[in-house]
Image 1 (spheres, helix red, strand yellow):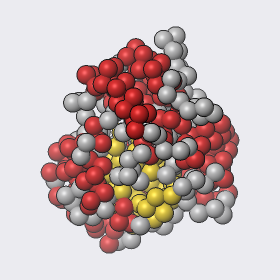
Image 2 (cartoon, rainbow, N blue to C red; image 1 turned 90 degrees about the vertical axis):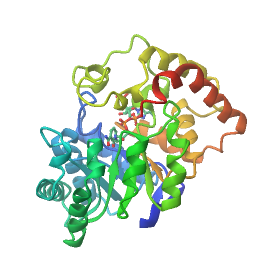
Image 3 (cartoon, helix red, strand yellow; image 1 turned 30 degrees about the horizontal axis):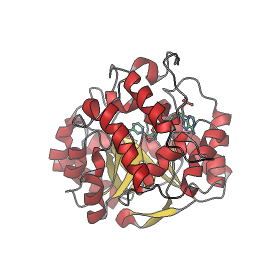
Image 4 (cartoon, rainbow, N blue to C red; image 1 turned 120 degrees about the horizontal axis):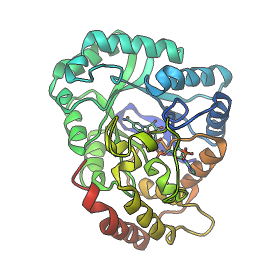
Length: 327
Ligand SMILES: NC(=O)c1ccc[n+]([C@@H]2O[C@H](COP(=O)([O-])OP(=O)(O)OC[C@H]3O[C@@H](n4cnc5c(N)ncnc54)[C@H](OP(=O)(O)O)[C@@H]3O)[C@@H](O)[C@H]2O)c1
């Protein structure tokens, strides 16, 4: 496993991390023993960065990370998120009182005295125009409740605006072979400012593994069933916002680019690693097999110019029109 510097915080972070949404919920039934085994496998393979949120399984994902901490001596970093417990989910809710309460709950769930990194969880765009929210985060740092804070964003411009707050240490964003706009300006700007980037939804919710077909069915408690058209949260979080059939067509063409001995998932992750502004990628892992497959991407050789051009051509042909200017 190779490591990268985590922005100005300076941690040495595995370039493949672990996204802990699915082990909490909203991806069909999960089993805690299988989830813990997958997380331990990730540690064995050199992963030292886990992303979670207070709402993943209403705390289940955070509590699993607390359990992981108790059951192993291997050091690792945890980044959690706050804000999505607000109802209604409005910018004004990101105030000192609410943020303090969310932080206290996450401290208990994870079982630590201070959170290493907490991210505002895709707050409404107006939040980035409320300096008082960021001042409240600064106060939580001063109080020792959190060590660093960042934001998770839906849109490139939200990320660029968030970076103007000097203590925003990390930005989490969707970036993958189906979501290429962050490569234009966002990644270079984050790098220039020493802001770490956490890349989520790298496999377009599993589509970029090549295992899905037109006949694939998802359980009723899986967002790939109930959020395909953005019914519950931003549609960009489900299949990266790509219309299902167009995604399948693109995947068929991408399969031809997979190097011998590698998998499409590994190609998808290695493509992301081609960009220097990427600090870490957090593929969601539900079991040890998926984790091992995803970690294997770190060992793949760099893609050639020709492979990069071919991926771009597939994007331009099938994806760009429905995705590029939306986020
Ligand atoms: N708003 C936010 O801040 C936000 C939103 C979304 C995600 N995230 C974070 O980003 C992480 C990653 O995003 P994501 O989980 O939405 O999407 P993803 O990483 O693109 O897809 C993950 C899903 O793909 C399948 N999968 C993963 N690796 C595989 C492999 N090697 N082979 C076959 N299938 C594989 C698994 O589901 P199945 O086995 O069921 O197919 C897994 O749950 C999340 O866990 C979360 O930590 C944050």
